[in-house]
Length: 270
Length: 293
Image (cartoon, rainbow over all chains, first blue to last red; front, side, top):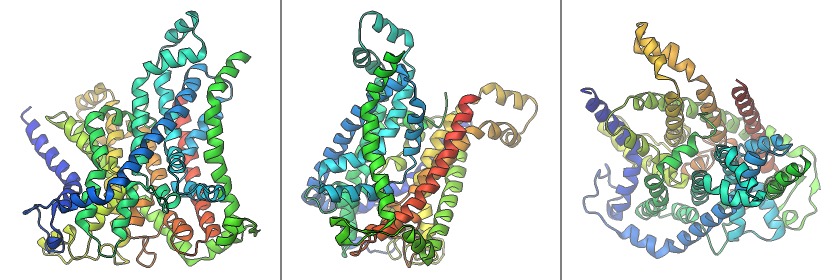
């Protein structure tokens, strides 16, 4: 145990190095615009200003609303599609499900930029570019295959005896799904929903291609607009970035074990 | 049995319909786009001429293609090597129990969870030539500053650094749980046999970690091929195409200018998809292999 504090010290140092960019984002967001081009830059916000945050409140609030709406919509759509399918794959196991699982694995490999191109072609034809629900559909493509696969593995771990007992009690397939298997795999639902939220919240590719002219645009485009301005005002950009990072940070604090479960699923077999 | 299959598929119908509509249809659309001669007018009103593989020919003949392909390979390989190497070193470090280790490990996840546009713009400002903190640090060590994002020699390095930073947490978490799955007795046995910790790692831990390493690298490969946001936000593939990859080039052709070229853009996209699917098939095969063993 004597060497333990030494490890802790090294661990703290490594974490500090790793998180330096995050610290820097916060530092710059508090730096007054006048000091922004100073060389070398101030390591600490000596005279912090909240100007950047005031501008966020002023200019970016609608973008936040849209992002929240899109992210929640994506969660609902993803879970509504993935949960029944996962139940079937895990518990009903119909013939011919193998190719479907294969398709889901391959679907995760498709680069977002290609999906964006294809969806753009379709959306233009149908005249549904720049709509919020169009963006929800596009964002869900990132999350659905992952959600089905992770929910399947969670639901597969619900004992078959429990499912059988429900059937003997006269519950139909849907009843068994809704009242037995779904509640029992609550952790899986949270993990899938969490990642769907995070991915939709962070999406830039689909927003830039499918919603760049819309009246309701997500936050990632709000930041992109700021960067595109010729008089790049970095303290406003970084203030928006800090606020945009809040959901990720909150999720990490509140739901860390779900995050770890999501990352390792598929990569490590327990 | 027939009834059971029927009920099972009834639960799968919404998913299958969704996959056809939201995956199948867009992918077919990109194939269709790539074999036609589209202009803005025909894109909206239809009636573009089928020109077969001419778009692909144009793309392959374009000197940008070679640059983009080479950059994609360099970007992917360098990112994977550094992410995996650093991730493995950190996983080994964190696998020793010490105070605060769980908390610190959780904090390491932050870069992975941040929206890519947030990470990319933060790095863009840190790499700024005049006021960036990276050049300030170099000056502190008495070194000359570098035009990270605006010099063709350094732009690719800059985006690799940012992408490596984002990928480390994933490698750390997966490799860490892989290490935890190796039974403690194995290490004890190696120690009893008098193996030094380097020997134990080289001949015991690392070989036992191989399946997890393979999956980590494959998932990393698929993810890195897809990277678009980071490069586009930091350098837009520039300057002069020095950090263009297939993904950013495809976007640039289709959406980057007032004169969209959807045909060539889709052709590039389909080349990229082929690379991703090949990687995907290798992944699926390796998964099957593990299921079987």
